[in-house]
Length: 216
Image 1 (cartoon, one colour):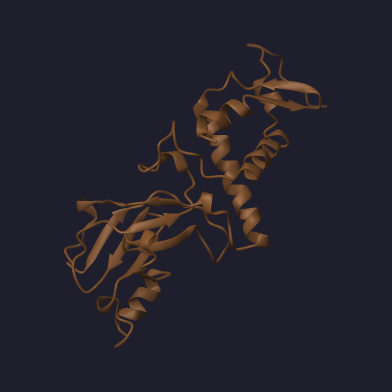
Image 2 (image 1 turned 135 degrees about the horizontal axis):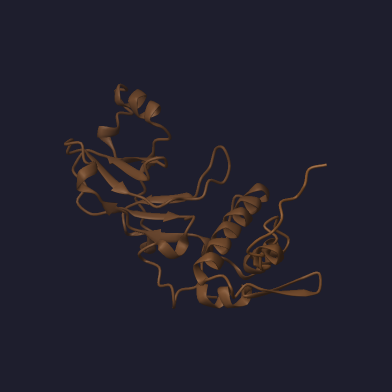
């Protein structure tokens, strides 16, 4: 299903026998609910199995940002969208490397988990990042930092679980299937129905003026 098709599906949700009309919300709001529900569903799925549905992953080429560069020819920084944090140890990055993934001839880059570890590796005679291609994901600054023996010319290929799938440049909003399996789509629909946000209350008209509630 495409994102517009899922949004249409979510436009009318039944709760307690009452049809909730969320057409009063624009598509962007419903899409935000879908994105958030998808993240929660994937996190919940990961608790039982690390093998998440392949459809949930997207391929992406990060954008090179000249102002981020440090002057070190062996280090290149790229802008990176938000990814899903699955638990305290794992996130949504499945692959980072050269773009020959489709030919089963992968050349993935080693991942450095933190800047502290990068500093440790830098002083190691064998594990020095300058000796091989490696990358560091900085979620706070939304950047990817690649290190290697030579200057990186082309953007690497990333395959990830992104928080906002439709914002990825390689995604066609009207034609591409939204990265969520069919059972996930209906699970998120149910999640929205039972959500603490209570769409029925959110869509109920509020009087322009009301008396403040007296505290007894």
